[in-house]
Length: 255
Ligand SMILES: Nc1ncnc2c1ncn2[C@@H]1O[C@H](COP(=O)(O)OP(=O)(O)O)[C@@H](O)[C@H]1O
Ligand SMILES: O=c1ccn([C@@H]2O[C@H](COP(=O)(O)OP(=O)(O)O)[C@@H](O)[C@H]2O)c(=O)[nH]1
Image (cartoon, rainbow, N blue to C red; front, side, top):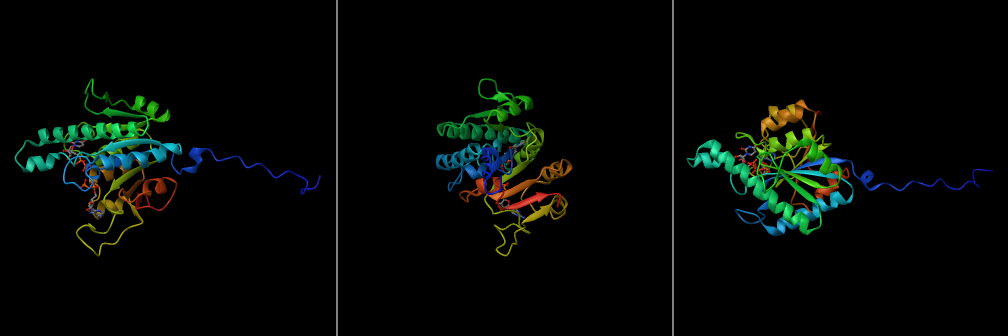
């Protein structure tokens, strides 16, 4: 039989998860991302849009863990500046992240996306206590898992919590959603001439104290070689684009 007679080889169809560059991600949503155009609180329209974007990832087979911030409601450092005991302020900040996670779960479930909220601080009857093995089981079965209450300890941030949980659940990448397009050589909100990095090493991010993520978080990802991508959550479709391998925002890695 000549090669012309042979039937063309059948190309196996790509499974849905093959479309994605990553199998499992840890998405960090800042509390302020939930505020939308308001100054304080949670904008349901923003939650619905985020639910839609997260649903697109679940739809292509990506396992999604989420750490939500609480800065739209309370920040320990700000409360302390106003005269409150710092640890009490941090506890209030961590509780704020639980409220945001509950609101996010509500929006996901209204969009028929199965989701779970776990808390680093036990809160029986409201949310499950964080347990790594259970979280991985939920992720493997396709549920979106939200890790609330940060690390459970004062003096940390939810960026550190995101990096910690990302490493614990063995995510392929930590994806930090912000209001800016990535990491710049200086704060782009304050400096119109700031220049964006496409890629940055952990050491450069630490040495230059670039301010987009706290140094504790960067030390943690550096020590565990966990890549971080910083991108603009207000850009529609950016999250899906970066997950399928598009060049969104800035990649922080070993370089
Ligand atoms: N070098 C930098 N590159 C990018 N953003 C920076 C930089 N320095 C400071 N920022 C600020 O960091 C913010 C993003 O961090 P994020 O954690 O989302 O905000 P917040 O700390 O207000 O919750 C941006 O809004 C930006 O103003
Ligand atoms: O492990 C943690 C994570 C958060 N927080 C507190 O919770 C607040 C809200 O988190 P964050 O400021 O990181 O939220 P974001 O900026 O992402 O909205 C922080 O200011 C801290 O007061 C804390 O004490 N420990």
